[in-house]
Length: 109
Image (cartoon, rainbow, N blue to C red; front, side, top):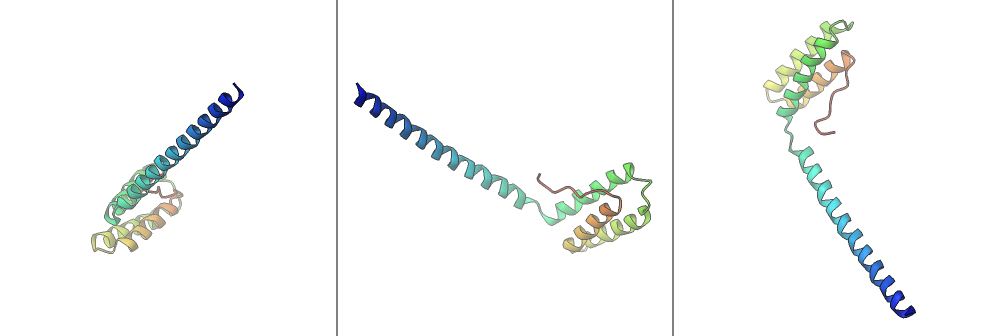
């Protein structure tokens, strides 16, 4: 009887180890899919997202002290984005948001 219970415990331990390994592999696949989603956004889409975020932030932060400077940076950022210089445009738009006191939202959080 004791050998049977030891064998049973061994089988249960083996099953739990296999289950844990399978769950870890599923977690790795899920993490890879999230990484693919983050990489899937283009710079042009990021420009559009930041510009849209700026417009929304402007409505709620219209009384900010640096609104004029922020609007100028937004115009420059949009111009860079339109002229295939998205990296500079993204930086300008992010800085414009910071002038309003808003943290730019990352594409996937």
